Image (cartoon, rainbow, N blue to C red; front, side, top):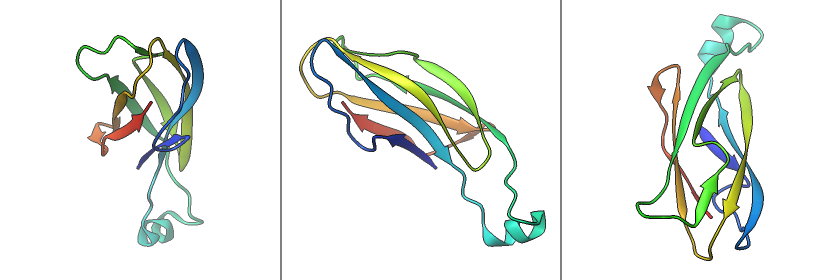
Amino acid sequence: MGFSNPGGALSVRADSTAALALGVQQVVEPSQRLRRGSGAVSVHTVTWHVVLPPGVLGIHVSSASGMFSVGGRAMTPLQIVSGSPGTFPLTFVMTEDGVVLPKLVVDV
């Protein structure tokens, strides 16, 4: 399951930068914990990319895409740069080992 920190919305003044962390929390069923022993969670690769609204020039993300490893819960840091006033929905599309996760939208 994808998440952001801060979650849901991020306020950034025009011509300023703010930090945003993009993360994934793996959901492990109790039956899987028992089979694996001691609740261990295996490490997976998460790939992601951001989708900006069409025609938006007022916002920039430090990286438009990337990948990180997750073994339970993990985050990757991003910088959001605002070039003009307004509210912009950033949509993050993520996959975990090729499986598409639900889209995550952050309003900036």
